[in-house]
Image (cartoon, rainbow, N blue to C red; front, side, top):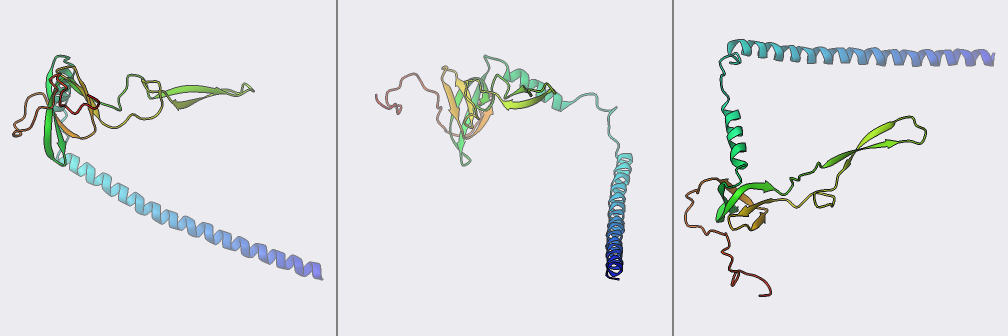
Length: 197
């Protein structure tokens, strides 16, 4: 008798549990279907809107015979690679001009380097089950690891390398900004703030 009651209770519990599981599964499926259909409707509405806009104002692919953006990029690249080009770097602090440098060549980022930042190494296990590629940090150009300090650097017409971490404006022609000092050195260091002189 006790075994029979236990079996009935167990069956009732299993049936109740099964009922709850079915309710949860079908209830969740209904929610997903409603969410999916709402999401699908939104997506379809966006696609219809895009198609209508594209018909009203079509992309002018065949009418574009030139690209000013590509011309600008090309000209900038050509100018930046002229080694004898003179340029002007105007140094700013909080929006105010402090002075300017006359530079030869281009302004460069201290974060750029001549070698790749990452290396691919292969890790193979002892059981010869294969090797896996891993990307690891490569040493910088100077042989050390980690990022360089932020900023830019350039070379003045006198050959001095200058590195700054401030706002600046670069131009390949002088800009009329009022009376600000030229910061290029003359080669005479007397009175120029040299320590230990």
